[in-house]
Amino acid sequence: MERQLEPGSWDLTLYEKNARLGGTWFENTYPGIACDIPSPIYTYTFEPNPNWSFFYAHGAEIQGYFEGFARKYDLEHYIQLNTQVQRTAWDEELGIWRITLEDRLTGAKIHDWSHVLINGTGILNTWTWPNIEGLKDFKGPIMHSARWDHKVDFAGKSVGVIGKGSSAVQIIPQIQPIVKDLQVFMRPEGTWISPPFGFSTLGDEFRKEDNDPSSRQYHFSEEQKRHFAEHPEEHLRLRRKIECEINTMFSKIYKKNSEDNEMIREQMTKEMLRRIGPGHEELKKALIPTWAPGCRRVTPGDGFLEALVKDNVDCVFSGIEKITPDGILTADGRQHKFDILVCATGYKPAFGPAWEVVNGQGKTLKQDWEPYGGVNIYMGLSCPRFPNFFTIVGACATWSNGTLLPSIETSIEYSIQCMNKIQSEGIKSLSLKQQALDELYLHMDVFHKATVFQEPCRSWFKSGTKDARIYLWPGGTLHFLKSIKVPRYEDYDIEYINRLSRFAFYGNGEVKAQESGDPNEMSPYIRNADTPWNIE
Image (cartoon, rainbow, N blue to C red; front, top):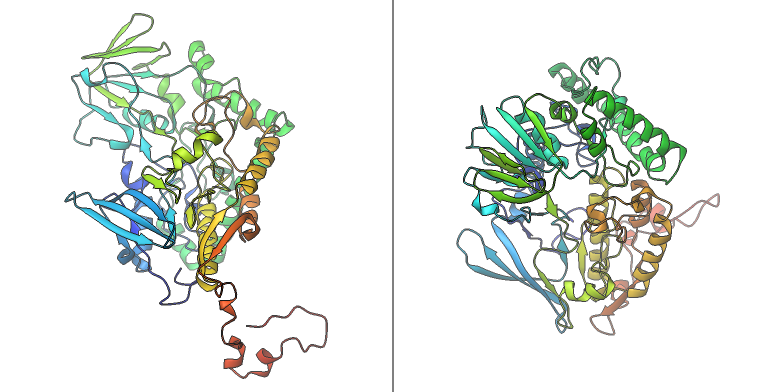
């Protein structure tokens, strides 16, 4: 906004419910938390970090990067911490959003307003306890992976873990070596444990020998960090090489019944069997999916498979009947006892924000979306009947199509372009046309018939079910970025402040070039050849 909008023409407030910025990386501090995207590209695209300690950065270091970015660019004064949005309502008469907030430290109510409202809370922001009888009856320490209790000592204890998703995959290898015994309760639905993304881009001079298939992390030395800092073009080449490999994955993995997908399936199956080792047939049957890689987001699992077959680990596939004061009772009648319970049960997908959003007709976003199957958002960006309201990579964006940060940046740029148009052309409201969204969904539905996403796996981008509509972009990240780089204003209904607003941006009849008096700027259309020209 500082670069793209006229200075002094805007005011920005970022409301953050937590005591620090960082979102996921502030809230999740469980053992082993790390990013599954290579650190050289897990940055803002224009703000490289040559100082990552690991190829797959740990959570605390990522948190430090984002906080450092805010300090470097003096952004902290825009952020209001410990402030939670409770309700937003569109005022049809004034063309503004009325915002109700709560100070989480004092409980005081705060009221604000804005011409434009942006939801940047993400889809996976509401962590959930498992819906199991007796959860509150357990007498030992109990914690969710998103609210890790660092005061609890796991050494020498009997531990139960519910789940085998991305957080469990990182937690289990960390606690297995120190606990007395570990019981892992998991659905026998399968999950693809993949090789690390982008690791092949590291040359032999970076990569350690793969003597241990459970550990493919790489530690950057101080000399290598210094080299990247002193040779930014070389660092840029590495970043682009990694991004290229991940962008290439979409066409290889996600096309249904493609030769590439079958080859990847064969390779991943072979690798999982190798890492589990001889025997453990029940585990292999439960873990190796019947559906294709990519149907659900694949999970790089550094040490996960190896931990599951250790002598002090018991994998439990029978359903959970209830939680008891000293453990879990499973459907097969077994009582499993332990001292500590970890619920690595993830998040409830929230395709709309957690707070109440009300349009000019008095309908909440949830009520408005109900006739459309519970989701009604265009390109992960905007919704019909909710003017001047934008989302940063909501449903139907690139949540499983490649790296996400470029999509986040370009979504923000899209919103700023809309702000610029609203501001410069005297627009009261910019509201998406329902017909445009209906036709986009028709295209998406046809496209996804040929992708692995429609196979019978349970995933959050199918609303946590196996057969719902697929709320993912119909293409790779590159395709998404190109598609939203410039807004299609023909897909919006525009209401102007008054009849003079539509052409108010014509101003006083003069252009910026006239201020300089430079002949080149004053007559750019006078040329010696038919080349493009523009007037500032």
